[in-house]
Amino acid sequence: MRKTVTVSTSQIFCILIRSSATCIRANTGRWTGAGKPAQDNAMPHDHHDDNPHRLLPSEPALRVKALETILVEKGLIDPAALDAIIDLYERDIGPQIGAGLVARAWNDPEFRAALLTDADRVITELGHGGRQGEHVVVVENTPDTHNLVVCTLCSCYPWPLLGIPPGWYKSDSYRARAVREPRAVLAEFGVTLAEGTTARVWDSTAEIRYLVLPMRPEGTEGLDEAALASLVTRDSMIGAGLPRSAGTAA
Amino acid sequence: MTRIHDMGGRFGDGPVPREDDESRIFAKDWHGRALALTVAAGALGKWNIDASRHVKECLPPADYAKFGYYEKWLAGLANLLVEHGIASPEEIAAGRSDAPAPDDLVARRLDAARVKAALRSGGPSARYSSDGPAFATGAKVRTSAIAGNRTQNGGHTRLPAYAAGRVGTIVLHHGAHVFPDSNAHFNGEAPQHLYTVSFAAGDLWQHAESPHDEVRLDLWEDYLEPA
Image 1 (tube, chains in turn yellow, purple):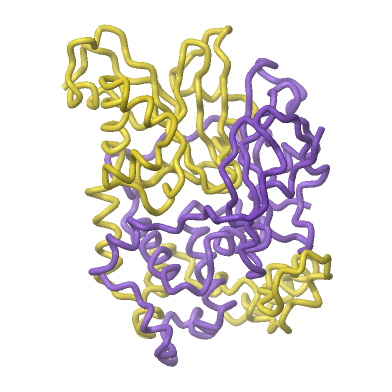
Image 2 (image 1 turned 135 degrees about the vertical axis):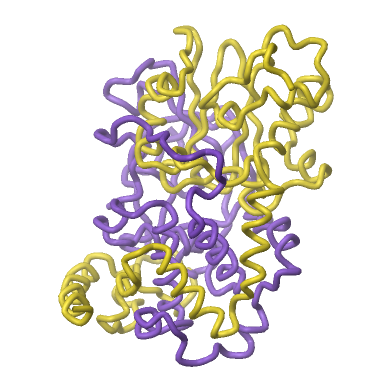
């Protein structure tokens, strides 16, 4: 059964590869800036090399198991490192970090100014930052402007400040629609923009990661940072939501 | 010119799906494992983040469309392992290793004790450039007429099709950054200046919700010319 499938898909790959030759790695030569037909750079290919992911089991959990087994047996992966990575994103790195920044910015004008002008320095000094948050820009919501963050080309997201992105952020629908109809998308999240408010969508096409500084809810004047942070939702820091109202503070 | 991943502005996707169980960081156990495996394999240093994005973009459109987020990661990882000679197609098919990896590669394994520091340092893309920026904040620029890699047919690029050939305004300058169109193909980091360019929604879409809304993209100098 497996053999039949492999043979027939190989024939398809053969056709596919003629039109997508750059997907074969061109390891030789440095960047010259000169246009060169990709086929010249391409290494000779074995039909079985094309899209080898199709050789993996159909059940995703078994695909992970297969790749992990191969890499552990080769001595390239420490299974305890995988546990440590998962643990870090399940326990330590999440939206509570971004919420802490927002709450402090609401209560401390100097901190707010620093966060808006040089977020990288502020984040580094607080011991945050790192993978997928190496370069951060914080953008402020005002009565005139509402910011919304997306990555249309993949799913770039400020991991060290918000953790692992939610499923919807990575969905085709959000990636496709947030740039063209942000108001319709926001309405699905229960956010209605006033007509005079500009929707400003940030498409994260480079390694700059954007964090939205939402507007401070009314009636929160006396609250301390911890209580304020409890109002700051993950979605409000993506721009897809608003902070909770004052009465819900922890 | 573009590939399946370049979906900004596309019609037909329906409402944003919100049915995930949000009480879990990883909706399924294997999601976390797939993420960790990809991060740990990337730490071996055989490829860079631009190449790892490109390999997913190169998936056959039918696979890309049907795969969930972490399934794309797994497919990308499998293809990178074979492309870089770390695993053979036979090993991928069998789910077992036929031979240990070379010592120099094993020496680069990410051990548990190093995980926190490795994720904390990440991989900054800012680089020094002796060239000054070509554009000042406030300058009007036009993006390349065609969203495509200039030297590699079907190669990696970060100019989405929806923003090709449009006039916008430079609003931020981020200094020089690694150029993905080169780096994804292992042709050097070739850093160049990176800017945030603001476009009026009315200049991007036939039926913008409000013509005064804005879309801002981070674009490298190669994608831009004075307007």
